[in-house]
Length: 152
Image 1 (cartoon, one colour):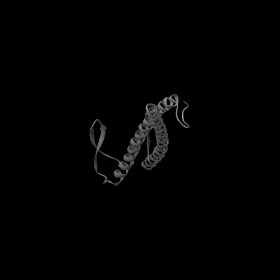
Image 2 (tube, helix red, strand yellow; image 1 turned 135 degrees about the vertical axis):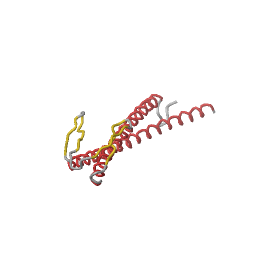
Image 3 (tube, rainbow, N blue to C red; image 1 turned 120 degrees about the horizontal axis):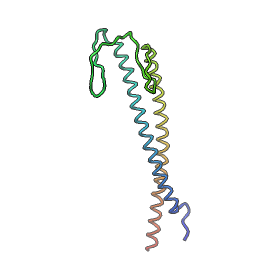
Image 4 (cartoon, rainbow, N blue to C red; image 1 turned 90 degrees about the vertical axis):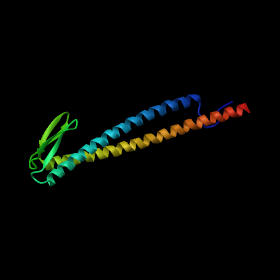
């Protein structure tokens, strides 16, 4: 008895299962990358907001400067002073506030673009997952229907 038109062979179903597993792994990786990008974007936005807040504050305002591990020191910021900004690979550069704010804005824009591109990849991959899942489900129903017909 030959397989009906459009029916998946057991080998094709097995290949679809492997493909589905690979797609899901890729999807997981993309979602993790998206989370990292979003966290980085939030850090950059917070830095820009902090610079803006410092510029709006009165000259003698005292700040708590985070050191990490929920440790802080009290300090006063020199609003006219330069900003130290990481540029990658552990390198920190001293620059004027307007330039630092501009660089942070550019980075945020690039991160937004990267997130949008990643979301497009996630959507395309999710669509593939859905198609392969439907094929597997249809093959399973067809095989079950053939078994039921064979028993009758």
